[in-house]
Image 1 (cartoon, rainbow, N blue to C red):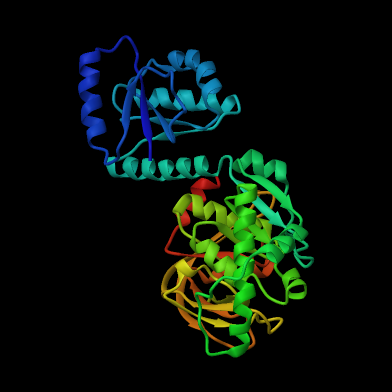
Image 2 (tube, rainbow, N blue to C red):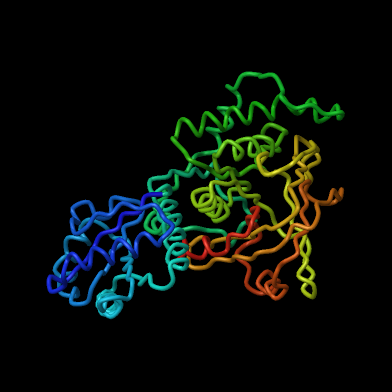
Length: 396
């Protein structure tokens, strides 16, 4: 995480005295940074650029610098202040000016612990945004016919996240599957039907790898149900493996779910489990989520089964470690999001549901109201750990 700190100082103040205050203040922060001083020539080139307003009387200096800074970066302005030498008052005047002119910013002020934590959060968010900028995500086939509310606006996705969406015809994947060689199966099972399905599941995996390489993708979502009729198999195994390799791989052509997974991958460096609620208890806040694949790097163990709806191919029943989880989803137009923390209390293996089944107890049972009155589609992303604060900040 690169944090660059630039200084803003009034000429009326004694530089020697201000330098001593600067040293003491910055030394109290538990973050790694590069002190740039008053040289703004490379402002905005790091993951996070901070303007340390050291004194009052700096408002006019900032205003003169602003055209140069806006030319170099369109990111929000972060104004760090120790509160000494009228630096907080100057920062408030600067932030007010920025907001009057349609620009975003924030004053970072408080205890050393608060400032350190805030800089760490902003640094992680800035690094994630930099990772997403220029990413290419594929839509292989169109979104499944039943995803009637899961549309996206590609131009808005590009503008807000820096992600380019690439449409890839399903025929290209089918041709790649036809051309994929038979490879030795890494998996084993006691089911003869599943054993016979493994070679084709491997070919689907190889074909998707080729598509990713050919189109220079960082991830994709697949209209996977078309494979049931086209090759009499599923993409569940392939998606579980590709996600574990760090390639975002979503199901059913659900683009908002894919974008949610990409945000998680960029921000936290972890995979996400795309699943849909199967049952909800509004009184207790207990929910059951299920889907037929889960990234292999998210589970302690897994079993092979058939795909639930069709009863063919290869599905994954994964068992994730019980404990803290976060449920996350962004809307296709990026105007809405949902974040809830909870606890994975157990996994189940009911025969009448998609194969990976997780029972999650929401920390706030009132959040079940969202699923029943204003949901963002059906699929949501489940990830291990509590991550509300980071996710809230990257969506600002």
